Amino acid sequence: MLNNFVEEIIKPVLSQKDSTAVAFCIGDRMYTYKQFYDIIEQIYSVVVDLPEGNIALYTVDDIRTYASIYALWACGKSYVPLNPKQPRERHIEVVTSIGSHYILSADKKYDISLDGVNMLSTKDVVVDGYVRKDTISIKDVDDSALAYIIFTSGSTGKPKGVQLSRGNVAAFIDSMNHVENLTITAEDKCLQPFDFTFDMSVCSYVLPLTKGASVYTIPHKAIKFSYIAGLLEDYHLTVLQMVPSMIRNMLPYMAELHLASVRYNILAGEALTGKVLKAWHEGNQNMISYNMYGPTEDTVYCTYYKIDKSNIANPLSSNDIINIGKTFVNSGLLLLDDNDQIIKDKDIEGELCLCGSQLTPGYWMNEKENKAKFLDINGERYYRTGDLCYYGDDQNLMYVGRKDFQVKINGFRVELGEIENRYSEISGGRFAVVMPFVNEQDNTELAIIIEGKEYDFKDHKAQLANELPPYELPAKWLFIKSIPLNANGKVDRKAIKKHFEL
Image (cartoon, rainbow, N blue to C red; front, side):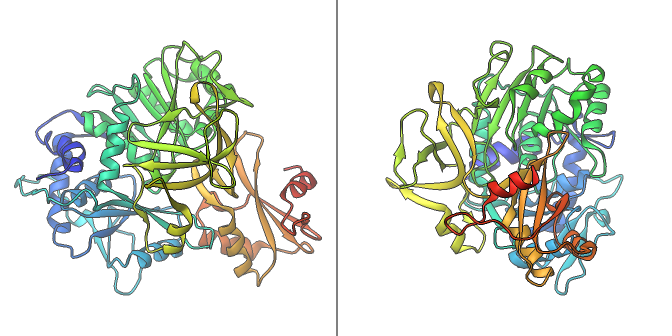
C-alpha cells in the first residue's frame, strides 16, 4: 500500500509526465512538466541502485537539482543539501556525519576531493533528445523513512542534522492546504528564492508542484531583491515566499515594482513588523499576506496569521512585531514557564513547545541534543523551540524573542556559540562574544567582541571565512579590555550592547 508522501508529493508531479505546462523557470529558461519528468527518469536510473539511503546533494540552481530530489524520493531515498556558498570544510563535516559515499551534483566541476566519496554528475546522465522509457517505479517505503536532512548551525561548533520524514512533509503539505483562503492553482506562478539548506525552500517548490503550478527560481549569484523585482515585472508572479528582509531591501523601489499580479505573500524566517508589511501592501491592497512561523524541526511552518485589506491598517502586534497566529492543523503547541508548567493565561511569557505529525523524529546521530530538546508532556512528544511567546487576543501567539542566543540572519538560523567556538579555536583560545545588531538598512548582522588589545585580525577573519557560511561571518570586529560579567558571573550582553551601541 502506497503512503501519503507518495500520494500527496510524488504522484502529483509524475502524473503530469505528458503536460506541456511550465513546471520551472530557471534563468529565464522554461521547463515543462513533461521535460521535468524525463530528467527525473534519467537521474532515477542512476540513483535507484545506490546502496545508501541518505544522499548528499550539491544544490546549484539547475533543473537537475530539483529532478534529483524527486528521483531520490521516487526510489525511497532522502537528500542532504550542500550549499555551494558554504566552504568545503562544512561539506566534509556534513558528508562525514551521514556516512555518505556519494555526492550527487548538477555541477560537473564540483569535487569535494574526499577519499571514499564518489561524485555523481547529472550532467553526464541527462541528455538532449532523450527517449522516454517509463522506467520509474515508485518504491513503497514507510512514511517514517527520511525525506531530507538539513544541517543547521550547532552551539558546539559542529552542524547538527535535523531529520524530516516523508510523513512530516506530507503532514506539512496537508496543513498548508488547510490554511485559510490560501488556494494555489495550476495557474499560479510561484517564487522560490531560497537555498536548499534553508527549509523554506521545501515549501517554495514542493507546494506549487503538487498543484501543477510554475516555480520561478533565483540564481545563486544574483542579488535577490533586484532579481525578484525583475521576475515580478517580466512574469507577473502570483505567489511570493520571502523573509521580511527581502521586502525591506525592495521598499526603496516600491514605485518601480509590479505587485498587481500578486495574490499571496508568505513571510517567515524573521520577525515581521507592521511598518514593513503596510508599506508592502501599498503596492497591492488586494493581496493576502501570511505571517508564518516554524523551526526546521517542525517542518518549515507550523503557525500562521492572515493579513489582508480588512486588517492591514491594524494587525495584531506588540512593539510593531506582528503576531505569529495559531497552530496548523497537523501541529500542536503549548507554552511552558521556567518550571516547565503549562501556561494557559493571556499575557504570560513562556517557552513555545511544539508537537504533532510535522515534528522531526530527532537530530541525526545526536542523542545529547535529542534529550535536551525533546520532552514528554501527558504522553505527547514536544520540542523546545527556545522561543519566548505569550498568548495575545483571541489566543494568537505574540513573539517575544529567543530564550537562548540563537538568532536569524537573512532567515538562516545561527547559533552564536558556534562562531565563538570557531574563533577561539583559530585564535589560540582568545575570548570573544558574538552579538547581533541591526544595520542602517534594518537588517540583522553580527559583531564579534574580542577581549584584549586590538590586533591585526586579517588572518583570523580569513580562517573564519574558510570554515563558516557567509551569513555567519561577523560584519564588525570590536575589542574590549575585559568582557563585562553580571552578578551571576555570566557575560553581561546588555552591558556590551550599551558600550558599543549595538
